View 1: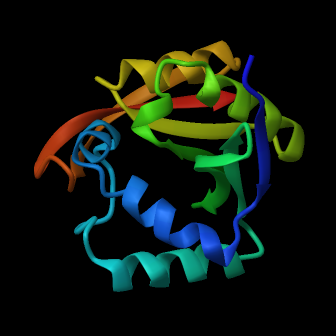
View 2: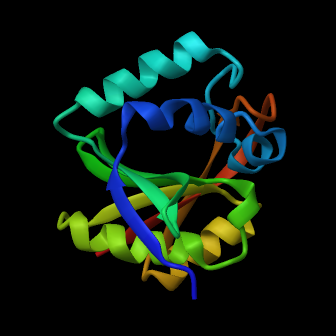
View 3: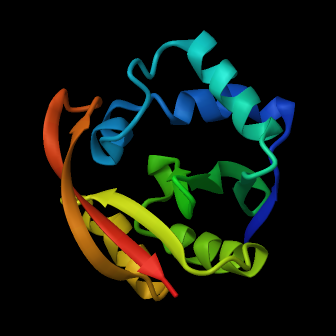
Length: 157
């Protein structure tokens, strides 16, 4: 089986990550994305902020040494949340589940929270497999769909 690993995000990763995070199908599935996924200046500013934040743990996800996405934790309104983004080429191959399992060993904070568009069945399955439980839903504006959609909220104790 292919090896999934985590490592710090490097400056040389940013071009590939920008391309991954503007893939139209990935953006639609994630739903809650940057207002304009094609705005490189906004992407660079966001990544600089995330990488400098002491409350954020950001890791590159690799598959057999090849960069395939990111996974991170951040604090929002006092809660630690996790998020991940994987290149569409690796969807359905267990990469997200393995990356999340590895990341949960890095982030000791509990409870952890996560959110996903309620129709993002793949992401919800990954989170449930890792032990996250659904604690509610809310309707929020999803810039990628230019609409209000339901978002599922999960917690890992």
